[in-house]
Length: 172
Length: 120
Image (tube, rainbow over all chains, first blue to last red; front, side):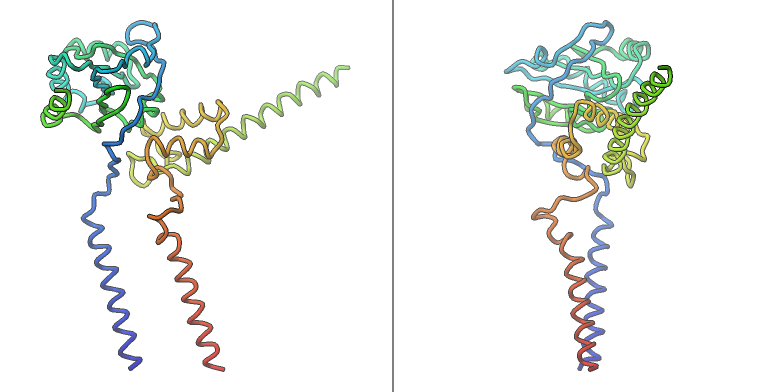
């Protein structure tokens, strides 16, 4: 009785372990945070892009307007990919685009905008990337849709046509 | 007189270094306890990605502002979620994780004790 019982338990344990690990194989091992979390806009004071004036977040984000905060850099390849969608979004006057120039130098960034067009209403420069950390950002590109001083939607990575349609649906 | 001067200067320099060293120590300790979210299997301390470099800078600034280690962890938890901490917090989702080793340990102990008494 006892000799039959032990192998049975071993087989069951083995099977359970196998199933857990097998299922784990199929799971994505890239961490995706909860992108629908409602969070208040973190206040910041940053240098304006191009000149040395200071831009304060309270003066940018006003109530009852939609803002699309986009973190970008000229050295970032996927940023070029999403740029046409930003230009498309610029045509919509219900939303204002805020550019967060991430760890970039002025010369490269301005020639990037010259070549591809400037979709932004306001650009601030985040030289050391610390302000982006306050936003809970991972890197470039990353975007936040802001309404009434709250982040209502977050886009990690380059935005695509689907995202664009979604944004247009939200701000309608 | 001169020796007093030298002593004073030395003591100032030394005490200053101690403070700085403490700051760097806690800074590294915090960075080692954080998961670099965009680079798999590395801590923020080990990583040189843009994200990790900025995060280390943020930690440094927060320490300078006078935030404690716990306060920095909770700040980052709000920003990035619990996943950023290597040490999972004890809550409903992690009961199993924390209690399983203890349960296995107790079960093992029970088996050993049982065998021991059976032999007797």
